[in-house]
Image 1: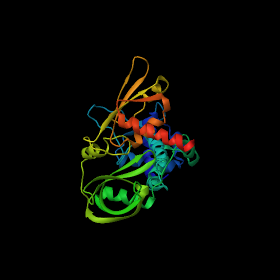
Image 2 (image 1 turned 120 degrees about the horizontal axis):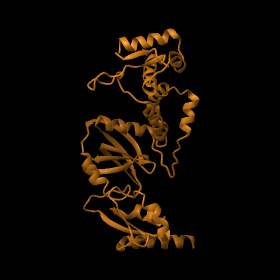
Image 3 (image 1 turned 135 degrees about the vertical axis):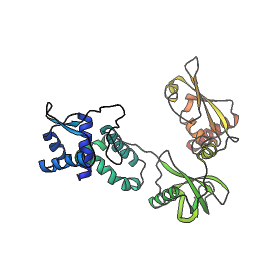
Image 4 (image 1 turned 180 degrees about the vertical axis):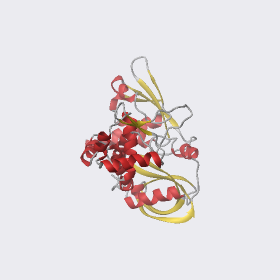
Length: 327
């Protein structure tokens, strides 16, 4: 590890263990006695670290604060505790489950290497830690990495983007100029929420349906996050709908499914309550019934739709079509 990593490691050891012997510091850092002495001297003289030698405990520790107004010493830049470093390394593993072609990992890896050095884990230990976290993805649609990076960069820089986009509903291709507003990962698929200047409104684009993308120098139109949430998050699932278009579905789950559904989040604004007979009633908003119908169907005869004739009719038609297909 380089000198900066050693500084952070020394501070981490003293914070977590209280008092650490010279020999223990050497073993953790794997440096010569002369190098460790220089590091300790630099921390005290140049970075004002209140490190003192405790003769009674035969080790180094931080000097006790003498007043409540004295600020805790920290090295310049970001400071992480051992638990925070472990959490960040674990988070990195979780992110790889969402990462297509290593787009995110490639940029984050240098920081992860430094964090690993600060934690004191060797390469085999780090690999073992990563293997203890697993993300299982199903029905994943990969987004071409060149567009993910391009769109992410345009989002940060607040620039517009030109897209050639394939619309699956009618199998048509169109060219659009958009102002990126938000990247969304939903059920293992990436989407871009953007202001479409062709249709003059907010739209959600699946990244795997972007056939071509080019950055523009034009400044992007900014849309407040509250407006994004009102316009694109009001309906169920990935299908958008404004508050005026939203309807509420009332679903009643039998006791066998209720124990699972009661702890699930179907929508941020959902309402749920237990019924006296052990069933569970769930109310969710939706604008387009397509995805909601699919999720209802996966529960089979354990769920009943109450008071929504159009939704009941859609589900009945789906069941009829399935019966005819497999007859």
